[in-house]
Structure formats: C-alpha cells, structure tokens
Image 1 (cartoon, rainbow, N blue to C red):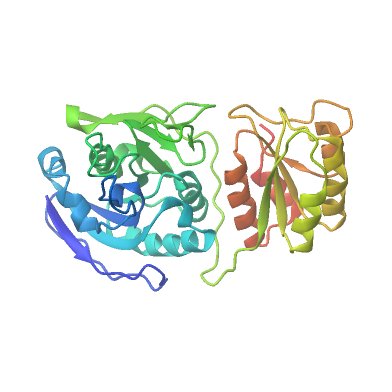
Image 2: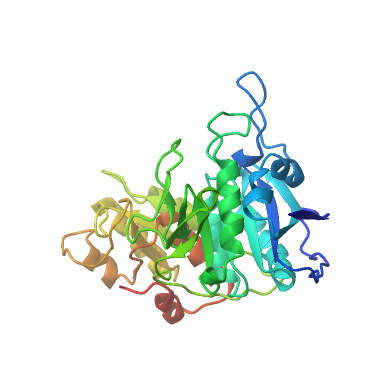
Length: 354
C-alpha cells in the first residue's frame, strides 16, 4: 500500500488537482474531517480531534496487510468534532469530494459519529453516482484498547474500492455493516454497534480482517438527487420535536426568524398536540412548507387519525408526510430542496408517501 498526500484547505471550494496513477491496483481517496477517530488522548488529557490523516493511517498497519493493492490518497479536510459540522461545511465538503471523484476509484470520509448520518445524507442528495463514497468513524479513541477506528477504516476502504457498491449512493460503514446514508441512524450514545437502519436493515456486510469481501444484499430503498449550483446559499430550516402539551410558541419564533421550512417530529404515525395546530396553520398561510416525520425510532407516518391535531387535519393544512426518514434527514432534504428552488409540487415528489 502506498500513500499519496494532497494538501488542501478545509474551507475552500476551489478543489484540488489530482491525477490517477498508472500502477495496478485500486486508488481510494481518504478524506479526514475529524471526529473521535482523530482523537489521541487519555483520561487526563484533552479529548479533542488532533490527528492528521497520515497519523491515523500509520496507526492502522492492517491496511497494508489486507488491502496490499490499494493506493490511498490522503486529504486533510478538517479536524472537527461531529457536533461542529454545519450544513455550510457539508456543502464545502461536497464540492471538495466532487473534484476528487473524477480522479479516484472510491472515496472514504472519516467523520464524527454524532452528525455522520446528516453529512452522509447531505452528500447522498447533492452528489451524483460516479464512484463509491463511504463514511466511517470510531466510537473509541485511538488510545483506547477498544479502538474500533482501525477496523472501520480498513472495511470502509475495501467497500470504497469494491465494484459491487458502485451506483449505491453514499454509504456508512461501521462495525462490519454497510448502511445506506438515507436509512442509517445512530441508536446508542456509546456502543460500537450504534449505527443501524431500523426500518430496512443494512445493505451489506464487510469483515476485511477475516478476509471477507464486501457483500451487498440490496440497493437503498429510496434515493433522490438534487443538484445545487456552486454559489448556492442554504436557507434556515427548523426542526421541532413534539411533546405532550406543546403549543405554537416555537413555530411563531421560527417563522419570525425567517424559517424557509419546518420539519416536525410528530408523535406516532404523524400526530401533534392541539396547541401545535395554530403554528402549523400559520406556517402554511405564509407558504412555508411543513414536513411531518415521527419522533419514533422507526415506522412510517401517514394521515390516519381524524381528531384535532391528527394526521388528517395536518394533511388538509397542506403538510407533507415523510415516511421512513428521520427528522434530521428530512431537515437536510428540505433545506437542499429549498436552496434548489423546488416548487411545492416538486417538494411533494421528494417525500413519497410510501
């Protein structure tokens, strides 16, 4: 295995100039953005991302052993903790990756696990199918005896270089499972098996250290592509989770702040407390789209019940139901669609009812 280092700045969208080599083997670009996989600390030191891409790779000798023909291009994009990633940084990352994909066989992006599902879905929506794009990370630091980052990185590189996962959209590889970015979520705050796809299961499995090739079970259930211009500005879209006794105050505040869209994590199949209805109605009167998801871990939403605040009333108000898509992902999707100038009719096509 050989490393090709490319210097890059984390906040520029000008791209990098790379060329494929003529040597045999697979070329994979590894883009490092920070997260726990980049943390080198013990209990008595600062637990923050500090490691460069090359420093992380040097801690994973298994790459050379199990992927000897893989050439890794090293790109240090940022050293951000997961919660520091913003939609604007996601947009910058998408532009960076868009350039890289023209010069490599696959791309791996290391990322903080706290926001990995959002960033991976952002890229899934705005980047077309060219080469596999795979996100991975770690739940333990590199100085922890239980460090899972090395195994995850080896597996991600193997998937990114696999022909089986071309045209599969953006993927997340963690703990031996391959997930579609549109379906995966973080389900536990600490466990290494935290990333799961509750409704449909993983799209494949991988265990490179056991000499196991990436296995694909199925394609992602639903995918959409929303092209964005280079100089686009992302609008403010609010995400609100319902709770017992909730009223319309948060809706009024969001609308007053200029929200271009609101996503509601409703109760059950898509129902809200009665006090919320006035806020929804006010948003719709202002032609602000309102998307309904569920605060439940899994399951669809649908306009089924008829009582005040129930799904059928929300449907009459013009709300869009988004089954099998979490609130954070629905927010990302609505934000990108609004930035792309989608009409109300086209918005509904983006959130199919089944």
